[in-house]
Image 1 (cartoon, one colour):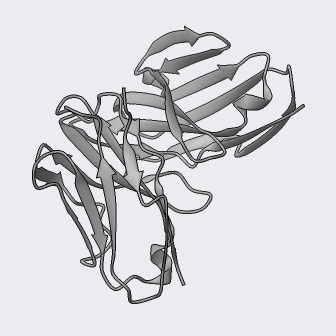
Image 2 (image 1 turned 90 degrees about the vertical axis):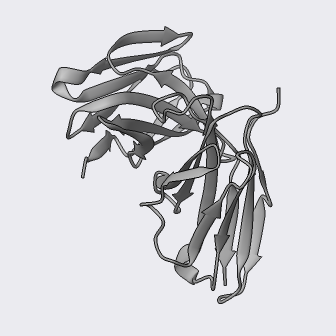
Length: 115
Length: 110
């Protein structure tokens, strides 16, 4: 079956521009996670949804970052007034149940470059 | 917060060689996973291993939770094994997120 998909795969933004990154999880998966991966580093947790409820947003680096999952399926990560330090790969993952300890299935990521 | 340390940071091997990757963690964890990130950036779960030993083909993993470490073994390396291997843990009572180490970058030469 289809895995986790993300779009766009690549995004170049000018500093100060707003961007929106989309994640389509595996159908029926309850949990959805966003991670940020800087060059040469491991992914770092940003936020977690269980269905449409955002249960943890402790990893969002600033109030410029906003995530939503209004119908409990597709999720969007929005970054306002992008800065150069926002350049990274943004990974989305989903898991079948409402427990993060389940195996997470990752999408291919969106590589964001802020000029 | 919890520290997840992986070693070595980089490893270059000839095709056919064996390797051992290590992950140390500083606190008790609910779960531990090993991931492979291929050169195109895709993360694939290899093992879900809070304790004990598991094997899958040429790969095996062992976690000794009481001593807070895990090992990933790769035997008879192939060029397709190249990429970055991440250890990732889930905290006790905080199962809503995974904390990743910085990874071991493995390059297998033909």
